[in-house]
Length: 178
Image 1 (cartoon, rainbow, N blue to C red):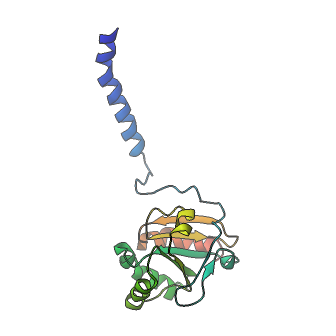
Image 2: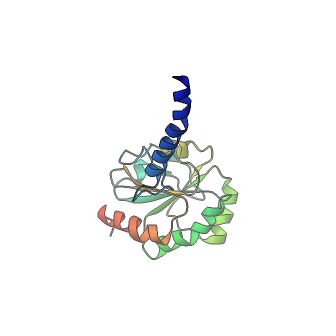
Image 3: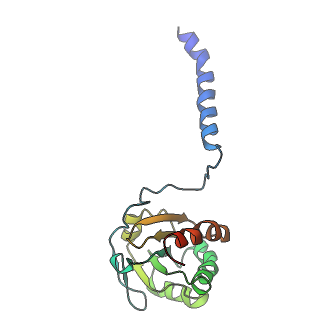
């Protein structure tokens, strides 16, 4: 009986691995997409002091769809994403708000002075607690919040032109942002 089980062990391991790969390689599965338990739930309550001006709060952003981008000066992908954010703010007039994540205010100010500031307002999440409540894995991360304050979409990593065209802009349009 034990010998038979030993002979079957490689077959069982092969079937388990084959099943895992079949699941991971299924059609329409994006292996880079990280699921968020926050989708369609109310955004976490927060009140953040501002970077060079007024701060932001969840309740202050209710009333129309908005886009919140978590960024930091020490984040290389954030620097790569900056031109896309500038286009969204300038050309598309997207209501874009920034949350400076675990960063020094003077470093964030230097980054924005160098690359431009696409944000209407920026909150400082110095200790990372707001990011933690949103479920941020790392920066940059971008969230679409509807007019009632619910998270409708999360983008992990720098936004791409394809994501903006195929996902972000259509979603904002469907939420009432023309």
